[in-house]
Length: 200
Image 1 (cartoon, rainbow, N blue to C red):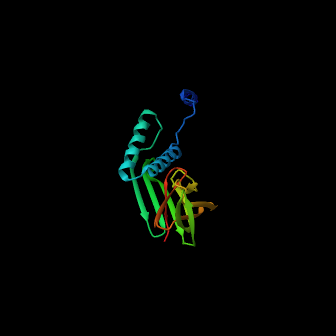
Image 2 (image 1 turned 90 degrees about the vertical axis):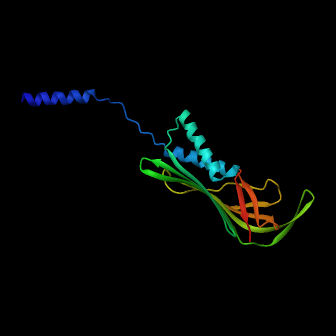
């Protein structure tokens, strides 16, 4: 009986010594994914290539060392552009070392033209243009293991020169008219990312 009492007192003493403070675990994935998405959009806006992307990642990692953002290590970053007869795709991919292992954070920017309709004439600052009409689907896709699913965003687009005509016709869809002399005409979105309109 005495042994049971001593054991019980010992266990109670050990429990009393344990800290009752809550333990915190930082979930840094969603914030880091948002930072990398912002970095990718900035890279696309200034003219992205693999060298520029890696410089920006190194700057972010350097900033993280002075201002602890609690980032997972970024193992790799990659940029790729694909342009076909009616579609332009920019793809930025980051490999991040998480607690589960290497995982991807990706930004995909898609501009897809659907057919060519009639042509119209327009004069801008005394210069006459012939414009070809098309329907353009333009969207950003953000993928991360820390998001519940693929996120899609439909940025506003415009032509800073005022030559092209751009009108929203629904989420991610635009009626655009671009100069007929261009097989690839560049608009811009609200992040100053070039929107490559490829009209057949």
